[in-house]
Length: 316
Image (cartoon, rainbow, N blue to C red):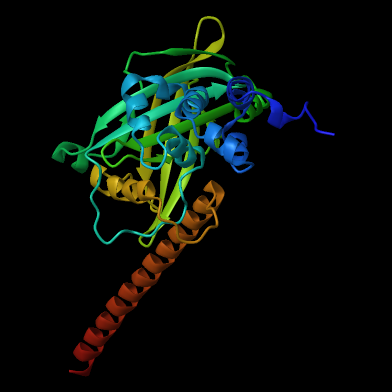
């Protein structure tokens, strides 16, 4: 007896409009491997465009939408595949580096599945001023504020609530080469409150590694209080620093970002923020010991010169 009630008997427009539109990215990609028909239906650009817009509302701007549609290897589907996963942690430095002349940031901040901030930022990166200055991308203007539903911290419970409830996605796009990398750690790595002003700084971080060492990409969200007792976002910025805690300039940052945009992976293990801090502390301790050894050597050398000079005078 033929089964006339199975999934395969559904009209194709029903599957496309009422089934596939309810799937998230990984589920839609899995559906494409089930049959030739589902592979065809799951490859429709409008499905992946809607997924990109629902996952990252900041991608709805006309220019970003156009760039996504022209990504090689599938347009919005290719973009989603690269942007959905975090940046590759271990990278191989290309023999020739051609940093992008422009970077587009698409940023989305959620708190308990509620969108707090969604914005895209275009950054010119070809000028000498950008490449010589400390690398920093600011998402908000100096006097721009964004309200949030988050209660201003008054105790440890509030801090835990922020850590568990807040997520951030910071995606960088190279609009020329059509490449993308997600620099977000998703969850905050630290939360600090200024003892005097009461401002709260929420930090997200991801670690990039190449043959020259490790680099931390950190996103800082600065929040202040409001009259209603809720926090408001006062600033969102992206910076990069090396293992010595020195902030990279635009030129050096573009090299690391170029490697991440290339997506060339080395080893597959991820370097966590805690591992980076531990390696940073070990590096500092080795540096201190090396400086102490050098000081002792200089002191010993100076004493030996003094003794030799004293003996020379005494023997005369």
